[in-house]
Image (tube, rainbow, N blue to C red; front, side, top):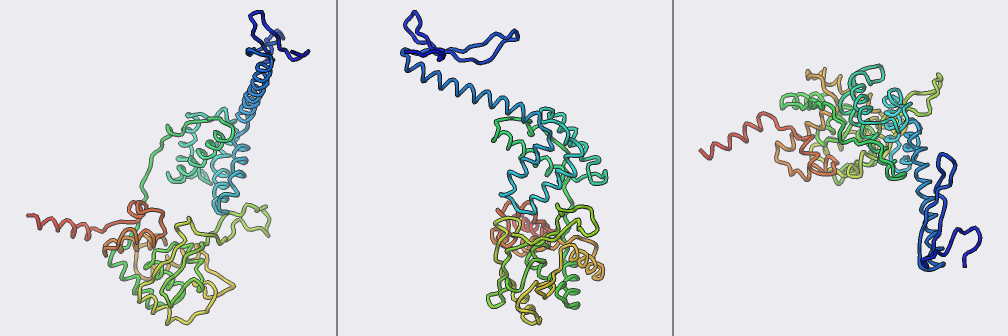
Length: 382
């Protein structure tokens, strides 16, 4: 039997009808929605379900309206905090810096409802033309990283709130391939000769990078505890980098940046690298501490990446080799390995790549001599 206030009635056709309020007209008249069933009990259950369903839809709509009226700056702050426990500290600092320096100054004040294809297209062009710290042109990679950050944040809005903000698939921008520096055979020999004749831990570190392909941050964080001369293996399990100090308060006692030591770039970057015999012998002959950082031979001090980069450029100048950045050692190592017939899978694991495609596409640069030798093999068919 229906109760007063339930809005459940038995109709003349024998069915039971339940009604609930869904809103009002402009004149203030109540708008009802009805559900029907064969019995009072059935319609009561169905009415409750529909009320809950309607309230959930109403709440979702109100939430969607609220979210879309939120500024991009505030929304990105929410997204960044949501992923903070899942990412490395260096990644968090990088994302925070991109938001602070590239996104907020250009479109940070816009509401999410105002972000459209044309907004992102204009934003992309703005970054390419004058999006840097000092109104300087940004590289296509930096622009791409910034757009990927926005894409991830907007995907978060879809997953959490069911809101589709913008389609990134239509956004395009000119991509430029960065010129990769690889030392030729003559430069390779010149560099080895200089490093051998000017013995120091930093020069030994450069030689180690040339014959193992380890990254500059991995080399700076390398300790003697992770160099196993008996087995001839080095273990790469951490990396060093200088990052923006998010706690910087613009006081003289504060530092704008700071050095951190964290786990490597990815899980596959944690690896063991066998050393060639000549490097094992060289390391054994070099007097060193049992513990501490490899480059400084000290437990209390270290050589950070930017200082090693500066030293490397000095080495190149003294060796009579054209300028290059430290990463050229990694590209040169990969290229020499391919020229010597290395198995690509083994090379990929030594470099710490997730798959061989990265090795082939980014780190293998066959020399003209190798290309000529390979082409000459066709002569056998003539």
